[in-house]
Image (cartoon, rainbow, N blue to C red):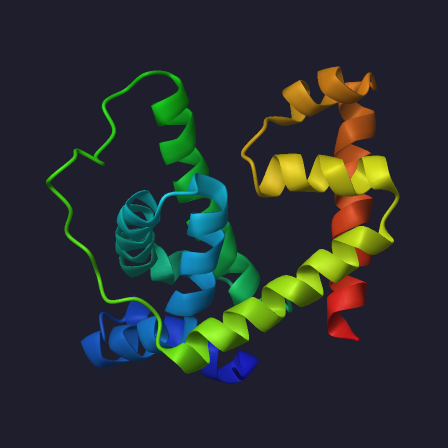
Amino acid sequence: MDRNEIENLIARVALRDRAAFEQLYDRVSAKLFGVCLRVLNKRAAAEDAMQDTFVKIWKNADRYNANGLSPMTWLITIARNTAIDRLRARKKGHQDIDTPGFELVAPGPNPEQAAVASSEALRLSGCLDTLEQDRGNAIRGAYLDGETYADLADRFGVPLNTMRTWLRRGLIALRECMSQ
């Protein structure tokens, strides 16, 4: 997946180019679905979160700023935040869309996309394991399980700003590890 290609597709989506939107979906949906599934742990809920994610991408593509950061970071952040919002709503007791007997299942990733997503997940897991245990657990809690920074600070017995520093430094270390 070429960074410039993804940035170009996002720019074209901002201009409401449906073909570019379809191409962007084909290129990134497997990875974004993996993010949603990891947060929500339910395929149907992850599929719904994916749909919401791509609606947000369509509506907000003009807000993407190619500032040297990976466009995948922007896309993954949208997917993760959408999934976390659904998870928090479910934890607060709101009606979940996952009503038994009423499931609209989108086609899943093809075998190649699934293999690529699995490989990336293994790399990320390996990189998380290189961090100090409490830092790795904090990152998993914040970015994969949807815990708030305040909840994590309480759980680990550190001030909120210390938790923010742990997470920021941990993400920098992960980025370096993943780029190798």
